[in-house]
Amino acid sequence: MDKIVFKPKDEVTSQNEETKVLYSDVCQIISDARTRLATYANAEVCMTNYYVGRRIKEDVLYNKRADYGQKVVRNLVERLTNDFGKGWGYEKLKQCIRIAECFTEEEIRYACVPNSNWVHACTQLTWSHIRILTTVKDSLARQFYMEMCMIENWSVKILIQKIDNQLFEQTALSKKPNEIIRKELMETKETKSLSPDMIFRSTYFLDMLNFPKNFSENDLESAILLQIQEFLRELGNDFAFLERQKRITVDATDYYLDLLFYHRGLRRLVAIELKLGKFKPEHEGQMLLYLRYLNRHEKKEGEEPPIGLILCSEGNTEHVEYLMLDKDSPIKVAQYYTRLPDKDLLSQKLRKAIEIAREQLEERKI
Image (cartoon, rainbow, N blue to C red; front, side):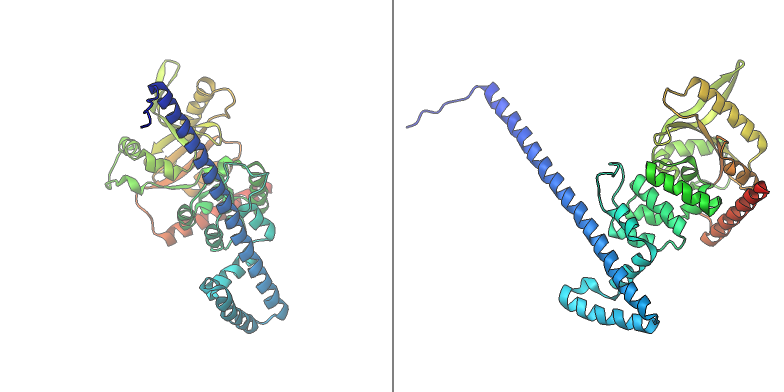
């Protein structure tokens, strides 16, 4: 009978640790391989669908007949489903054609195909992302959502929410002339960094706070802290909460800033003041005092100057637009809603704000 040899406890422990490390390394190799496969599979799906749509579009445009186009697609559907399955039905081909109408090959490659120039923080867009983007009719708004999607790592669900809430129309960027919007979006594409005009908006929805009809500024501030995660989600990515009622002492007088945040992408402190009622000019003076204090006493080396956001419960469009359009101003002004407004009324208000802003820009040129 063989003699049983017991290994020292230290030796057994050492072997267990080595086994754990080995297992962890092998798991990582397999996981990385799966990720690469999924990434390239997604890229092939997007490019294939684009090429299919472009080829059909070219054939239909060549013949210049709508009835011919429908007939071609119907015939293709019948043959493709026989050869490749139900995944190539009529709706799928319509989506492929729509993609080819909305995007160039270069844009699809940029958004969906990984390459050595990619910034690791960027999200590769999926076929579902691309399909949703085609619902945005304006090409500049579509480009805006594509860039935001990639930089802020939006899921398909979040992309749909942002489009439904008309995020682009709420930004200061949308109120500029088209050539300036195009230029700033190109800069974003090249640098993979967002400007304040793409981050700060003219409207914020705080319906998650469940307010009664009558509330004070202090109630609002307290409710935000209780729902800080939801509030951060409404503000957007990269915001970090720092302090409530930040004491600012100037000439032996104490002032208190409502909320202080930091934005990692902008590398700036963000001061937020909450106001009941409409924006007043004195709110700007108060915020400027806070920003100058923060710039002198709180800004760290390598950071950009602080920026301020004044949130008002009522909107006075022209006052707000004058501040939002001043590129040199460190102050942004926005209206907040504690209950979701009617979507049509909100759309009308946003369109009006854009019209006013662009008219003011034209007046400045004159």
